[in-house]
Image (cartoon, rainbow, N blue to C red; front, side, top):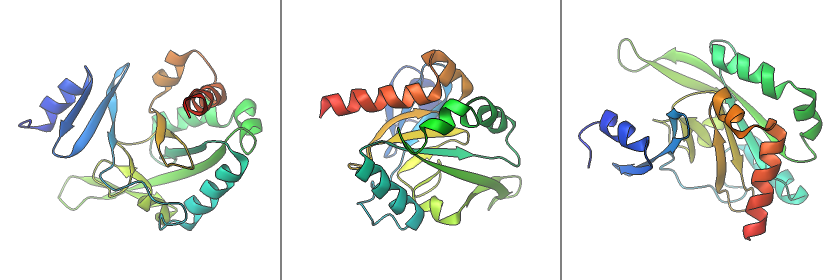
Length: 190
């Protein structure tokens, strides 16, 4: 085991590292990295989030991926840039509902349990059962927004996570095209 999170984070830059039951997976640009949730992937209609269950069922019916976008619209400059450059684009809007089902989950910063710390409050609150920051009890986790999760709605498997503008730019494609190609590659494997 690693003595601290910094050791795990440095090793995460080179691959996948297990640290106290949490898996850190590195991204091409290094930080930030995704933390896979310690909570199990919810069974269909049993997530505890009525909105997630409804959207997941819609994605299953249409045979398209479920895309969750975690943002911090009131406080996160990077989120606002990401939203403007990718989420609000006409190609993204026109693909939503046809090529993928989309759920925007916003976050608010709230005072943490210890002085000088912050926590995130999900909007809607029910989203915390599905997606959240590293200390959350949810299956899809990140160190913070912005985060795009591309999910197989049938299995609940996380297919891809995009955490920054750089991650999207590294793909050299539009966000809808990244989602479409990720889904095609996944469905070919089945």
